[in-house]
Amino acid sequence: MAADGIDPNLWPRQVLLGDTLVPAHEARISPFDRGFLFGDGVYEMVRVFDRVPLSIHAHQERLATSLLETGISGFDASRYSSIVDQLLIAEDLRDACVYLQVTRGCEIPRQHVPHAPLDPTIFAYAVPSPSLADLTGPVSTTVILRPDDRWQRCDLKTIGLLPNVMAAALAIDAGSSEAVLHRDGLISEGSHSNVLASVDGAIVTPQVGAFRGILPGTMLALAIESARAAGIPVECRPLSVSEFLRADEIAITSSRRILHSISAIDGRSLPGGPLFTRLFDRMIDSIAAAVAGEPTAAAR
Image (tube, rainbow, N blue to C red; front, side):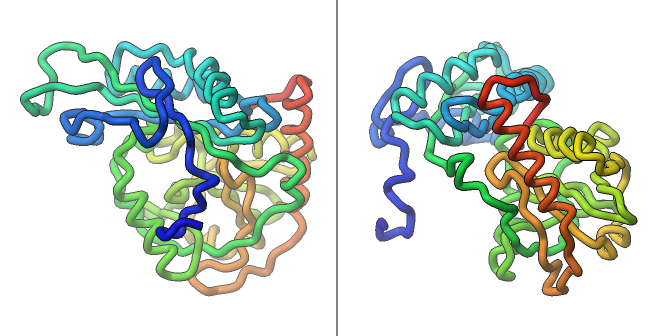
């Protein structure tokens, strides 16, 4: 373990910068890059099991939407798949998380609106993650509830994540792992996850697309598909804070987490139950089928 507490085994040895693989410690990006100056960029992360990137087409579609909506040009989102393959080979990884970040590029002098289309800055890297065999059940964790003071376009996966970072830091300070956010009396999502609640025998999750304050999580899509395949009722609709607080079970989902069950909110214990363990098992079966090349739908 390094002095800063980060396991050096998790550091990437090589990263992709532009079209070139370079040693991670030699990677350099201009301080005039608009990602640094303005947070002007988008990103994606895909989970890889046994060299198979889960729901890569859904990630590419979401990336394409983010690029289109922000007006960042010069990068084809369909390249993500080949970038994933390139980094897995370079790092000799079978199970990984592969991050891709695309900023609008560099321009001098600094100005809010570029005068002309710029060459985007492309940065990507891969880090090891647990294998499918390591995922034996949903991790139990705790959350805090916080107001959602982020901007209104959280449906885009942009790099301006300071409000998310602040909310997540408050959760860590409180001894929890995530902050669940609410706006106008309704649950939106976690600082870096989607939210599921068991209410009156059904799984309720805030409806993606109903408003732009929710990221369309690819793992959320898998959770919904898996629940319906298992015969568990699913309601994609507004979830009030009061409903959330009286839920029998709560879970959060993302590509890194797959599915974590929540044992307490703001220090108040939840009754718990078997529903999300059942859902987790069904999700793992679906992921295993996808890795084996069998047809399945999407998998944040």
